[in-house]
Amino acid sequence: MRGDLKNSPRIDFSIFFVNGIICFLGQQLIEVKNKIMFKSPQTARLNTKLEPYAWLSPSIVLFSIFLLYPIIFSFRLSFFDWSGYSRDIFGKFIGFKNYIRLIKDPLVWKAFKNTIFLVFTVVVIQNGIALFLSIVIFYGQFKYHNLIRALIFFPGVVSAIVIGLVFRKFLALDGAINQLLTGIGLGGLAQAWLSNTSLNIWIVSLVLVWQWVGYNLIIFYAGLQSIDNALLEASFIDGATLTRAIFKIVLPLMKPIILLCAMLNFIGGFRIYDMIWVMTRGGPVHSSEVLTTYMYYQSFQSNGPNDMGYASTVAILLTLIVLIFAVLRIRFVTER
Image (cartoon, rainbow, N blue to C red):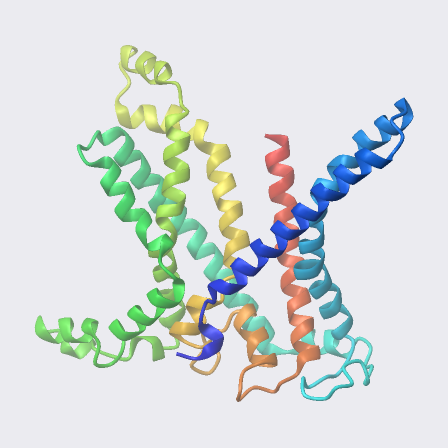
């Protein structure tokens, strides 16, 4: 497994460590301030107004270093031609050529098309299955419903890289899927599934649905628990069946949660990288390429063009798309 695909827990611990140090220093500064500053009413009011910002400063610092600065750096780099090897990063200014190239690049539009397909497939199928399972488990009154939910949710806590490697092995020419087909007399259907340019994006989508359907199921299940049972009992007294009550009462009340899950899946779908990279590398011949893998191909991949400036342009496009859906999600949650 290549080093760039490994998840290093030390990065997360370092962030927590830095955050803890900044919080400690912020607390010490506040204590010093309280000791040395004159306790007039005006000063006390000013301290009350400024203190929340002092406590927010660790998050602001981390956000600025790890998110805001890279975005600004990438935006600036998108106007330059840099291979990633020379020390003079901003030495060759090319203006809007990268953005013009972005519009004319057929691979960008192919990656964008695959991204949209992946997002809508995951959103529709994943939310549909999760909603159906949550209703069945909640109203089915199974004896081991907690165990069932845990088993469905379990793939979501497994690394996407591990899942991708397992399914890549299953779907190989000598993998378990083809061996099963051969064993039941359907050997003619055996093939290198991930090399099929018409099927590989569908396969990756279904694997993603399988991994994350439990996440949506938990959210839907919590939404079902919040519905007042008196509404259903009243409908049963009026002669409604469970199926009719679900379509006329439960689903309308679940609409805000369904929309929230769909928005979260939209944002997550545009950011998918690891599963596709492990299973297909965006290939063959860019047939399963998405914006994230195409950005990596343009910048860091060993056999790629190593065009950091153009890759930054793709990154800005992806950032704008995710930002739009993030703003819509915030507005939706605020309105609700």
